[in-house]
Image: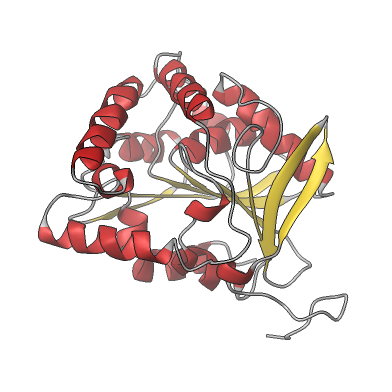
Length: 288
């Protein structure tokens, strides 16, 4: 791979070193990071509940950024982005569209996790010409069984984490067995690899608004997923407590031609626990 971008600048392929940038659109200043070689179709990452730019696993980002232009961003009202968190997934998808168009892109690939996967589905349905390929991980369809219970699961695991002085993601994303606990600690450690220009944490208000939007999504009438014709890769762990693993199978059934990967002995964060298997599978799937 050439080590310069079209402007003859060195290409950053480490998420820990990705420059922090902003772009303003529709009155919102969007915080984002980009890395990898410029040119071609970028891969835009849509992140999970309560997450900011600092919550992406570098072991997933970095392999993709070796040969692709990667972009991560904060939705309005999240992290360093200005504005307010909307109270619906549909509105979040429109915000994502606004951000992507502000950067000047007409075609993108999407890598989405959890809440991001819900946003990605709406984005692909509403703006089908924008999305070339879709990676949906740890997520489920609108109206999916028990998605609306994520609020209770989340607050319960936050309490458990507080009592044990742990990061809530250790409970929410990973099984509480020796394998899961080890994977959780390693994942949390990887999230600390960036030491400079870290993002602002999400506010409690923004977090609660996101939770309510997910609850509404879970209680809404199903979307017509048959309209998603883009090549789609779906992945999850086999024991997802936040967005039940059976919903990944439902997505696979309803999105024609989609591929499904279920990782063993893992939960909502199965893609992080099995990053050594997921990253190369995604690189291959997203190849031009």
